[in-house]
Image (cartoon, rainbow, N blue to C red; front, side, top):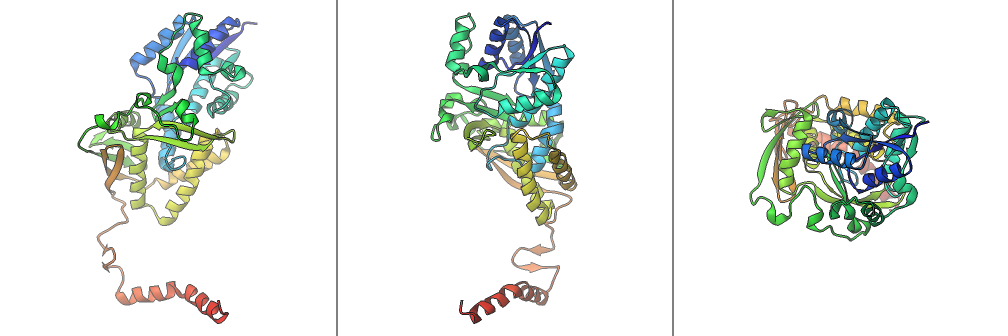
Length: 400
């Protein structure tokens, strides 16, 4: 029986090692690159060239950017999902899409196995394994990096001995770039106090190279979905790609996140997510204008849960479909425009407008209101504090 494997291929160190090693083990290797926003045309061509130079039987490119937004990213916007209140889950959703596309393509070409280049330490191994098993049940899963517990230096040496040389930075840092942001891992992120050198950042320039003046932009949302930028209607993918470039120039979205991994240990990762950070800040402010306090409370709770499940490879739990229904329902009135200022690493919301705004002209905060009289306000305050007043009396009588 022929042994054919499809490798989820990014062209980086880990997946390049997988291709070379698997071919040496007698596998017929196909490679598949799923475009989730991390590559331009030149990079896609370079990846294909590398795959063919490695001797693969065929290389395939699948564009899944719109699927990524429609099925995953829009819910992360609805949820205002930020892991640890800082990290916008830049690669979590992309791994699900990549696993699904690779699994389906593996079945289409008659492969008997799927392979990914994840290590034994991170979250991606679980995401790929779960996705492969759900979308391609019965296919063998091969993970050379995980099974051999290889270091990046060892991989680079193995490839160099066979005449395969990658750029030096590729061997030092693990970079995952996509529509929703870029993650960077290296020696500095393995320590709790490590600081990445400026040369390691991919999208954002150092402070001295950022514009000296702020840039204001206006985002339009319709039922929670970003649909316009500075008066121009754009499809969500184009809007995010445009916003990534504009916000990155100002250093927006750069950060480092420390949190719990799926395996139960602490992990640390650097990230750059200009569009995600800007969109979530704008969307959250628009929601404050149109949603009730109880909607905002439960959205925060369920949104955090949704982000956590997505991050932790629990996307296929049926609870996620229930939360998605809630999140979509909550966006019925989340339409309007938000003005954001980009400057020196910050995306600052300047203001928002909406036809459904609950902030009207009927009052001036702390001064007067057209909705009630002073006597009615006094009665409300009396009744509102009555329960606490009675408790205080009882406590005083008991000598407390």
